Length: 180
Image 1 (cartoon, rainbow, N blue to C red):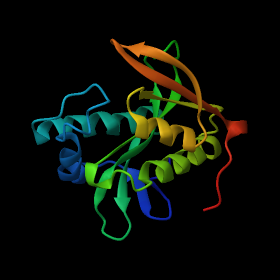
Image 2: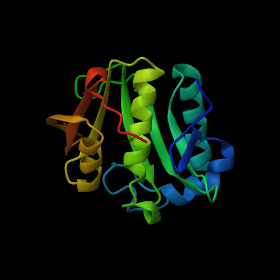
Image 3: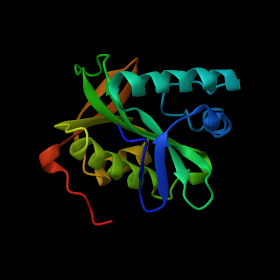
């Protein structure tokens, strides 16, 4: 596994304990959690626990959600990336899931699109994945737009604990990397 990859504006790298403050700012915001079914965190220890889980995913599966770091300011923007899913989701297991979460002040700036494209490229070129999946709450218009924009195809709507989500997929053969 590489320790970092880049886009035009960002460094994408493993999340470390040095990211606790930025990660806390992300996960304490109730608006960030509006469509993801989680409750905002209340302590930095919760973030430390999450980071420990992420770091274990890196060891177990060679990939996980990575920090988005602004090249100009070195600021923690949020996270993006691939998670190897071992638990059953919508009748699927053992697949790469594309996801992202950004601090609210960075919404609407094309960051999720830019980083998602880079991670799709990474999935197909470096991980040799045949397909990548993603899901979004049906009411999360912005996230649904991002997934379509980066080339994922809507497959179906399904229920996650009483909340409807859209299920998306992209195959290696369908992925066309836009010029960078």
